[in-house]
Length: 594
Image (cartoon, rainbow, N blue to C red; front, side, top):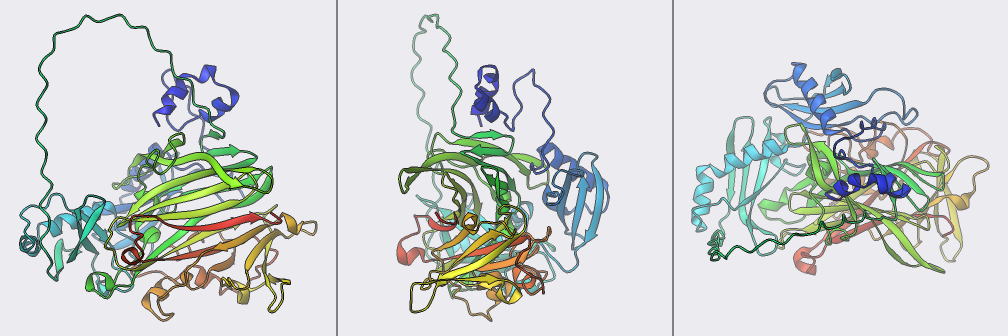
């Protein structure tokens, strides 16, 4: 974001496109013009997050041990996107009272609008709680003995990864707030898990209630700090020459325009934000004035492991619903995650203490060559963000093509080269508004025995769950429902590589995450249905998600539709040598007839 300082200083000389782009999230150098009011879909600023957190503390509804797990914009109604107050939605876990609450705050007036308990629910662990669990484990006498047996007397260099007990873990039934902890030693590239060592910390009682120690080989000694290089001998002072001031660098030129959180490129217009749970979200996506989608996001990420060893056999985690990808956003690396000429944006978000903070280089935007089209080279614009969740790093990417294609993708990097086999499942939620808010979906496939295209309209709940059929070339076409709608102007959902769940249908993992059982789900739009596994998946989950919503007796033709697509990937790091290469998953949304 250092480039914004240069941009702000050169506003007077900027071209119109550069001036549009230069409206950054950071204030210009004094004297600064008053910041424009935020747009209804803009994420909460750090000041708004601070104000919401203070309003919650001032309400005296929560004890001093309350954890503010998420404070984010309560998005305005789709029907009235510009009406009403800016509101913050918060999830709070009161550890002393063992209560989960949801609250809404009027951010302008710092006033609590509403509050309610969510009985029987326990949300995912916060970073502050995981830090407490780490301290408990590292000071436990059994842990010290386990490290001594592995030849270690100090362990300040260890990395500790904590996670909530999942649906396979017997500890999920504990009435206390608990965390599973794994321990890693730094390696030349990444980190390596200490095999056979795991702790279960009870955050309610402040103790380590279980330490799994299956023994293991000696650990490498801590990296020794290198002695500082000797200071060079003093040199005689040289007479300073008068130097001319270097000319100010030219303002960077980008092939796209950004104003606040609105993006324009080659006929495309959209808004974007980084939310605490989903990470990168697109809003009001259109091209050449034609609506495509009202909202598009990665709605849930589920990981389940397939190793029989005790350290892995009970492990599964909802990386969004229990951890929050946006909360674990990390800076994108220039020239590694994105080209060095990309524009990098800092984004606001809640910190571990609930207060606002700026996330450095949280979103990157860049144009790149998309390869050969029918008659010309194509271009595409990429928006991406990056999150570290446990032993995996996720790069979420949305790609706009100058031919009208809209793609969603995730790259997963495994930090531990010795990780056991596991599966990732990503569910993308797309609230289509193709030429209006009333749409229909047809299933397209080749007729058995001949190459004739069959088109089957999907109309009711019995057709709301669909599976990929590669042999039939199955895909789905989303079109506007108006009588004058042109089917050739719809959007095709084209599967590109997918893995079915290996867990049996009756397994705890499948019961906890039923959305992985089918690739395509279709529901009628409801504003509070944003996550494929429901609002609170994982430990003591509340029933919800697409598996439940598709049981409703409601039409899914000529309606305001939401499409949910599940991408599965089987990761075998040790067997296929992919531990150091990202695992890539992609969903294509292609204009019909292209």
